[in-house]
Structures are given as C-alpha cells and as structure tokens.
Amino acid sequence: DTAVSQTPKYLVTQMGNDKSIKCEQNLGHDTMYWYKQDSKKFLKIMFSYNNKELIINETVPNRFSPKSPDKAHLNLHINSLELGDSAVYFCASSQEIVRVGEKLFFGSGTQLSVL
Amino acid sequence: AQTVTQSQPEMSVQEAETVTLSCTYDTSESDYYLFWYKQPPSRQMILVIRQEAYKQQNATENRFSVNFQKAAKSFSLKISDSQLGDAAMYFCAYRSGDTLAGSYQLTFGKGTKLSVIP
Image (cartoon, rainbow over all chains, first blue to last red; front, side, top):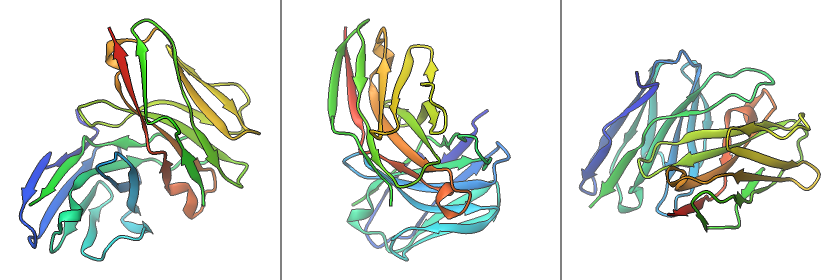
C-alpha cells in the first residue's frame, strides 16, 4: 500500500489555467506538507498543516492555496498558472514525536509543466 | 534561520568502492535532527539515514553511515560498497528539535548527484 499518494503524477497545462494536485496519506500522521522542487533540484517548503491547521506558509504567491478537508488529505490548488510554476511538487507527511527524529514520508511527486 | 550546504553538485564512484558526500549546516540551536534523503530517477524521496544531534554516536544503516561533527556543524554521508542502485540525488536536511513552529520544517541542501560507474 502506498503511504503517501499524490495525483496526478504528471500535469501539463496552459498558462492562466487553474489546477489542483491531490495528496492523501494512510499513515495516520498529524502533519502534512507541500514542497516545491525547482529545475535545479532545490527542495523548498511551501506549506505545512497539522491536524488540518495551517502551521507554515512560506513566501508563496497567494495563487497557491492549500486545502485540508481532514488530516489525511492536503490538496494544493493553483490559480492562474504561470510559466515559473513549472516544477515538481512533493507532498509529505510526518508524525510529530518529541525528541524522536521523525521521518518525513514523501509522495512520488507531481511534475507540473506550464506551457 | 538554519541553512544547509552541500558543496558537491556532482560526485561519481566506481561500483564496489566507497564515496563520501559532504554536508554542512548553520544553526544556533543545540537540539536538532539531521537526515540524508535519496531521490532516484523515479523522483520518490527516500529516507536513507538520520542522526539526533544529542547522540554522539554516528548513525549507521547497512552500507550507509554518517560522520557527524557537531562542533564543526558537519554531517557527511559515507556509502560503502557502492551499487548501481545507489545512483541518485542525495539531499542533506535539517530539522529543529524545538517542538514549536520550527519543528515542522525540514530545510534541505541543494543536493549532490551521485553517479555509480560499473
């Protein structure tokens, strides 16, 4: 069974469109994340949710809006897509445990290409 | 803010040989965690090894081991008996031990691309 699954794996779309990426984890984790990996492979956090509450909201254009209907899901909606949004987006989850180096479990990524 | 630096954009190693990937970090915290993640061509991010800063003993996982030098803020990854399947991007990452806001975020280095030569 896939621990963290995100769909779709590939997304090709035109500039100006609105698109969503879905993420689900079946690990019972409390915290979920969205990371963006740019063309130079640099991974940068975008958002973090803990028990459906927004914890981290890095400097991300407000065209990006995360939505967490329950703690097992964290979807990413992007409005008015721009060329610079092309990247691989990773969903991840973790169980916050004090003083244990909790693992971050990643999805397999969604390659977004904006034409 | 914490920063993680991987100074080797690319490395290569002969199959069955040993390679060491470098990572340094900057932090003012005393309690934190360090990780190495592997990203093969499939794009999946896979945890390779982790180290708690309060533990002096270096972590090991089969052929993977780290050299954790807390005073020098260095956390290198050694891969022994390299295999073709080890070819991937390797990311060093830092996570605060603070249970408040900082503990939710992993800060990644820019990655090192490892090639394994048959």
